[in-house]
Image 1 (cartoon, rainbow, N blue to C red):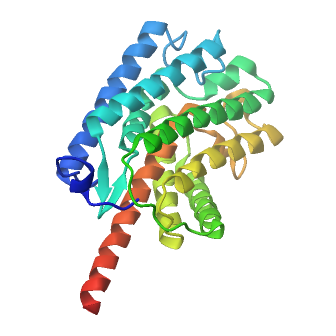
Image 2 (image 1 turned 60 degrees about the vertical axis):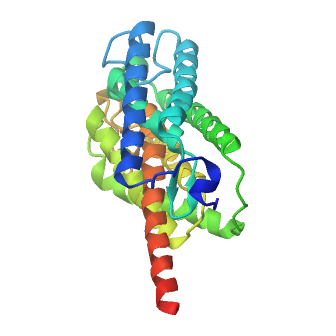
Length: 294
């Protein structure tokens, strides 16, 4: 999307990575974090704090999924009101609201605790099917929130459409780089390390994907963490060694260490931020090339 900031609103839209843009973004993220933390306390999620593991391992999984989905939608709206629109160069970034909501949803991951408790509660390889289903459901909600922000964004001249091969290349590159990073970083299912591993790996994957295939839409990059997570749970289902100890083994066992909520929150958040950073680099290179050509 391309437009002059002053054509969209009566005040200048801050750059995604300048101090004002960051202030609004992290202010929105903090507000959303507090909402999620308060909301999970009100509804008593999880039943035993820090020993839940996943939403599907709760006594009423459908209620837990619905409650978190509703909170994510609410926080996307709240994030949109606080963050507003951001920009990279002249490109409008409308997904600041969902970025704030995703960072805020990490509060749920801290409340649930490590994924090992979900493995202990079922002690059956089928648990990995449920973890994959939970991740897919949460990704559907994230996608709906993202689409809602895109629909509500100001109308701007459409950007040239990239070929499908570039979009698929962006996804494949992001998945490959994120998987490689996860193998080395995701050494434990501890909550903080899982969030850091997913977020850093998704950021690196999105940056690599955008450098190789500079598609101007973040969705082609934040899909990757969902694919990596579902693949990790599928591999763990096929080879559930370590299930009894709550710590999956194997060369790709690291992919199933994070919980579905860690993948659904830190994954898209890290990927969107990585896309923003790589987009800024492309913009700066384009400006320098134009200046040298003139």
